[in-house]
Length: 122
Image (cartoon, rainbow, N blue to C red; front, top):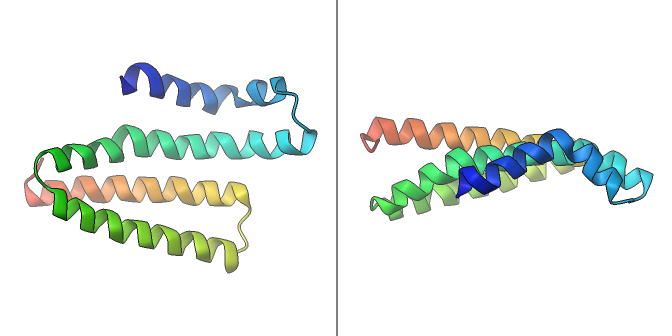
């Protein structure tokens, strides 16, 4: 169902968010921010939901509950710290934070794949 429903919606949002946001008749300031922010955050969700999240779920189904709980906990703490640094030290705006989300999703997906392959789980 993911490939049939979610992926097309994400891809549509990435490429056609301008028309959707303008069609909602929001204020110009909201449209300007949303047009920049939404495609980037949607890309993050596409990576997370299509690859990293599914691989993590498959590993849980194969009995790797504890390992995945530890990995997810560590990555969630690191993700939170990265967002905190991006906001407080680097003064990232909303779009910058969305790019941090993309980076986090990519790193998580690559780590899960490499770690699982190295353990012989794949």
